[in-house]
Image (cartoon, rainbow, N blue to C red; front, side, top):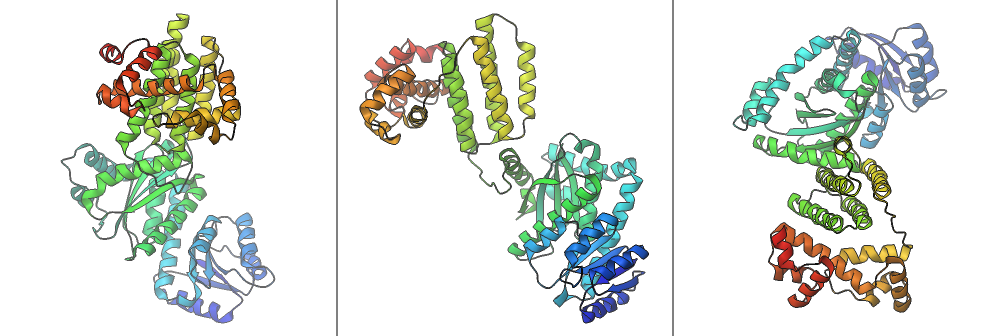
Length: 515
């Protein structure tokens, strides 16, 4: 292994050279340079395997040296010498194609062995990738993947049994679960085995016991034992491991880690539940394109939120109000994304709503839209980000208006804001004056403007909004009619029944029986 040390401090060069020579396990040949210019001259003459370089050097500094080496000899492995242990600095150097780093003040034989071992593993990895022995790699990955599938599908198989049979020698203490999501959509399935080999070898290069498993299309599970004992250090360690893995994936497969999550297992028995929990966090980060998003909500409450809007949209369609249905759908998407709801629940809700919209189109046009509906649903389930969904649904809401001969209502910003406020707060006692104040308008002017743009006065719209919610509550079957009246802002049940019949065309009891 030909190693070039570039540092303007002669003592550092000598000390590092001495340590490398003492690493008798490795066959090494040493070269030295006191600045980047000398280092480049040596590299032009000698097939260097490893460059260990300082950053601050005269003539040509380490940053420029790394850039030029990457241009002329991208296969040379680079390790950076650092005067201080800065977590963010190290992650930045790794993103720039550096293999690892060494702390000047703490260099000892253990560090040298670790670096040389990392280089050795990386050379092995490069050789494996160049051979492109896909069948062998796949064969090596299959046993653990099959073992995991058996564990995942059969709840009688314990996590402890799975780890024991994995053969990775994972300990129960400081056991971590990481899930990573790749960014190369559509290409991942072709490289499953390669990704697993890369991740596993990077961790082995750090002497970290691990198991890497394909989970679903672009997602992978990593189980490993942390070498740190303090939680904050374990978090830093994981960040660095992800940076090492990301750099290797970029180098060998031109793909990157898009999002990742990491959690320490307090017990092996948590494995199943933690995988499901962390997957939801990972999907949310991917969907909302927010690498730090951590919000987990009550699934039942999220589903109830979706059902409420689905029922309101269904009610609007049943009563031949396509524009209102389209507006409610837009509001549902906007509100869902604002609340950071689960993408799985949002997409399931949109799927149900799209069926209702297509059925309405059939009732209006008499045309068979089964194949088109199926095509739309398939596309919906492939959507991965909130922005994709918003653009897709906006396009189809416009098509829905066009097919049904409807024209979406255009509101001024003040009225649009007031309608959103009414929809979100209609179950409370909100007066005309209160809503006018929210949009900074005189109540008399607001009243006239509202009726002109919306086509009905404020009180009628408020009552309709309350009745839409009432229909959703009644459809859920969870509440009595008196409870529904109170929950939707009607203190008098008789008045509630009167308004309900005026809006819906039948009594609350008749509506419940018809469902």
